Image 1 (cartoon, each protein chain N blue to C red):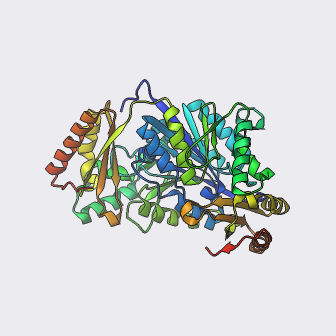
Image 2 (image 1 turned 45 degrees about the vertical axis):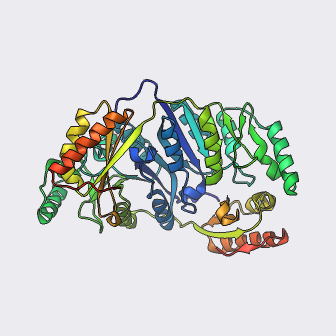
Image 3 (image 1 turned 60 degrees about the horizontal axis):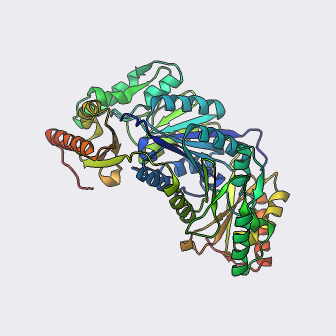
Length: 253
Length: 253
């Protein structure tokens, strides 16, 4: 698929030792991918990195120069291992400050809950100087935006709420639409014809071929991705015709 | 936790447009993380990148200079979007060749299955010059190793089989063991005491604090990670004592 002139790009940085040590299974990457695709934004890379300030700051700095938007997840709670805000401040060479409006919101929330507004809880009001809180439906505790970097929670339900709140304010690209065809032929049988169809439509679509597992009878799913649904449909039909000519069956998804 | 002198490190590179577009949910990262932790190897970073040869080659080159071992997943099948072998060859400035022994194995396999050894199927015998096939239990089609880079399949069952075959040949580090404590207190209540315990045991353990979801009653899981199980146990006991003093309950996992 030819890259659109007005392509809008993003990267995600998933922060957390727990992902790299296997203590926690990631549940955020797929949601972020789907949400951005729906907004016509191309997710070009995801990095999973440890709770290490130098690594976090360097990764934020590098990625935000490469893409239009960066989303980080994780490390914005009240405990000692929540260091993302200070690392993002380092990435921007800005001081970490207590955001006054957010501090007020948090104090009111803690008073209502009857818990102490201790120093650790109040860390959740810390942001790099110049950041804006990212308010959302899921909790009074906001994420924040610092220029093109959106700092989101790691807990999936809160991360989703924050991302949902961020997306309407982003510049949108032309949405990439996808259509898939599943069949009972092997990749090796499909490959030659598929390559010819991909070459013919190289400007308009990317065709991916994904073998499924034993539990799914080793079927192959072919995914056509492109910005024009009519062209996607034409390519899907060409693929279905080829499957028929090769003696295969289309399998409903 | 102080970094061990003899620390052995690894990175994973998950290759595939399907992961970045949300067409497929990643099922490989967690398995790789757990398998390496079990072998005493520290997974320092995971990158998820598209089917783009320049990006793949540059990422392989960068990561293999930073860590002891690199594992790639995806892109080694017979279809046009399977480009990993040629990109790894580029990363090493080596020609892509047909590996003679692997070609023979594949021809025998295709003959047995009664399918044609067509040009596309035979692409699965291609490797950078100097690579060694990585034989495994899951299929006669091998992955391969090129110096410190292990090239694995993307289909989870095959990826697992290849990784399982690779791990016994790797240099091992001191295993990082983990122990976890789940409780019904909020992170904001735990944070101060937890920070003090982390500071006291900074040389020996890393303590992570992970709030659970609404479905798990917003409990908090505290994970103690370190190489000495006795120290891990002491720290777990200190944390349990603190939870008791704060009026909380330990929740069985």
